Length: 207
Image (cartoon, rainbow, N blue to C red; front, side):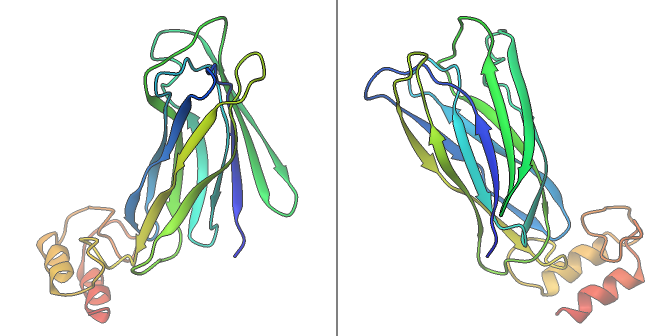
């Protein structure tokens, strides 16, 4: 299984023995849906100015469309720098850089980055993981701090599983029939924008 890497760079001002936590969010979505996954940094009382982090994911199941800076460094009104570059080797790698500008720091939890993701293929009852890796946490003096990682996951359901319960049955057919002639993109099965007879037929074929 080929994995993509998303690398995120910050710098953390940390005292010896302290540990910040990085948590990647979870989601349950249908095939074709685009959604957002937050990556949260909790300094756990550490004064924060930055971190380096990688995110591994299965490109057969997910596509990361873009990454935007969260509010972690901007929550106190301080200026921040956010940029990235893409490199390609055996893996596709995106390098992200974010840092607070000047002699400032934050100690409260916040959203570090937001991943804009599209679900590509069904995981059925399983999960596809977003795994944090290759962290490097440093004080301005170059001393390392500990980082605890919490993996995120996405469950990708078939498009016909409208209530995201892992089954395609009468409940999904009821949802589509109750929204007949409505324009609800998340329920539209054939991509024409309207819930019509063909959408009912496509759901029924999956029962």
